Image (cartoon, rainbow, N blue to C red; front, top):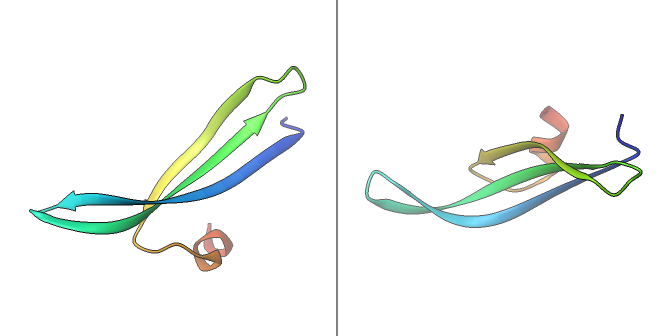
Length: 56
């Protein structure tokens, strides 16, 4: 179990079929009591916003 979990999103440009598109990369990071950080998940979506987080 992780006592601390962070969720964040980063906007990046990704090339798809010779077209550059803006996408959101979502990150879930867990931190253990000893300070160890683990990446719990990454996901790329077309848009950034709370709607995605509520559906996950």
